[in-house]
Amino acid sequence: MLKKSILTIISGLILATCNNGTEKKETDQPQDTLLTKVNAPELKRINDLLKTSPNNPDLYLQRGRVYLQQKDFEAAIADGERSMKLDSSKDACYLLLTDAYFYGNHTRQAKEILERCVKNIPSSTEGYLKLAELFFYVKKYQESIANINNALKIDETISKGYFLKGMCYKESGDTSLAISSFQTACEQDNEYYDAYVEVGRLLSIKRNPLCVQYFNNALKINPKSTEVVYMIGKFYQDAKKYPLAIDAYNKLLQIDSKYKNALYNLGAIEFVFGKDKEKAKKYFTEAINADPQYAEAYLARGICFEDLKDYDNAIADYKMAVQYKPNFEPAIQNLNRLLDKKK
Image (tube, rainbow, N blue to C red; front, side, top):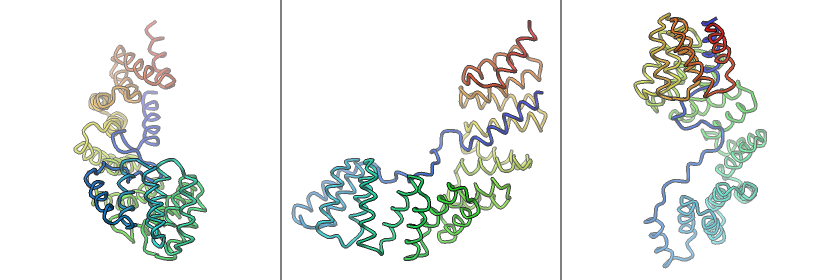
């Protein structure tokens, strides 16, 4: 009964989690990489130049990008329009306007600007890719792929295009085409961290050991990626290669000693497969110290206490699990069973 309970929790955690909440959340949405720290001296420099060159479209573009960094979207739009009025032959002004409208939550206007861009400048690969991102954002994956293909017809070496196509296939449920597209992105750019991670992630879901090679390639680019080291450990744990899983989790803890899911999984391995209940309890305690509201860890530690016949501490941990997760059925069942025993 105890082993079955903890195995159920382990499986649920492995399926549901990939990080400990301290890393950036992985999303499939276009990432906000533009809204960086304000550069006031740069804004002053551009304004000074505009006093002597008021008809320079590039200066309005530069200033518009600074306004975008400041999240002053209206000012960025105004400068994008000034730049376009002075010179509409380059796609940079369209792209600035797109970003300003998009980050200002005006996606319809962003789409209209991009459609004008690719119509007036049909060689704009960036215009097609941004349009593809917009369609991806609203889950119109076929329209997104069509625009990606337009960009790749112009330049078949654009790694970002293959990556975005992979994301479309992934969200559409076609993992085989997703893997193929991500692999092509890696071939076009052997420093494409996100592409290596996505290939590894999808191969690990298929229980394909080749995933470790892609994860290791990602680690060559970012050696301190707890996300990737965790996925390596999780893959080995799922494959029942526990020494390799333990090694990966220990390496992860050298990077982040409070990575709660690694601590939890080490405890689970020790409890179920290593048979060392005291060591398992120690890991679950460390996971709770990392996250005092970690209901699964309280339940798992409670099972350890119960297995060690320390029923008072087991009851206390089951109560904590229910406190932080009121509808946590395994904890409720274990708590009620022990309380009934004490009557």
